[in-house]
Amino acid sequence: MPRSDQSQTAILGALSIMPMTGYALREEIRDTLGHFWSESFGQIYPALAELERNRLVERRQVEGSRSSTFSLTDAGIAHLRGLLAEAPQPSKPRNGLMLRLFFGAQLGPEACKQLVLDAREQAESTLTHMEAARSEVLHDPDLVQAAPYILLTITAGEHSARATIAWANEALAQLSDLETPRR
Image (cartoon, rainbow, N blue to C red; front, top):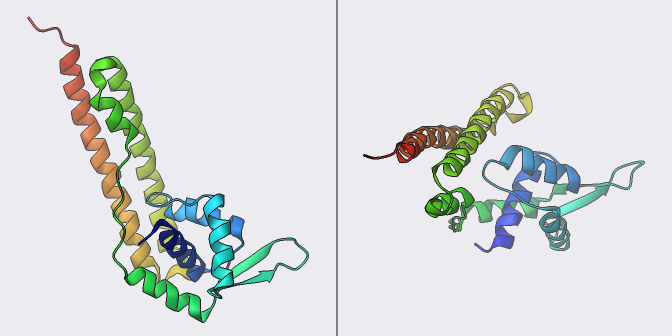
C-alpha cells in the first residue's frame, strides 16, 4: 500500500469516528494515533482535497466560521473498508537512538548512558500516557463500539514502552560495566 493510501486510511479512519475540521483531524491523529502513526498538515490537506474530489468525504462549512468540517460519504466508508482489508505496508526502521548506540565507541559509555536514560524516561512517559488513554477510552460513551479495537493499539503501546524500559535497565547495567576499569 503506497504512503498516500496509508494517509487516506488514517484520515478516513479518523473521520469514521466523527466528522471534524482538517485542524481537528491533525490533532486527533496526533493525540490518538500518535503512538504508532503520524500525519503532517502537508499530508492531510492534499489528501482531504483528493478524497473530496473522489467523493469519499464531503465538506460542510461551519456556520459563522471559515472552517469546514469533513465527514465520510457512503463511498468513503466502503473505500476505507477496502483499504483496511489490504495488507499493511512494511516500514523501514529509522531509530536514531540505535544508530547512536551502534557507533557508541565514538561517544563513550557516559554519553551512551545518558541516551539510554533519556529513552527510558521517554518510555516511562509514554506508559503514563497510554494508561491515561486507556482510561479515557474505557470511560468515553461515544467509543463503546470502537473501544475494544482502540484498546488493542493502546496495549501494544504499553507493551512497547515496558519493553523499552526493561531494555534500558539492561543496557544501563552493560554500560556501567564498560565504565569499570578492567585489571
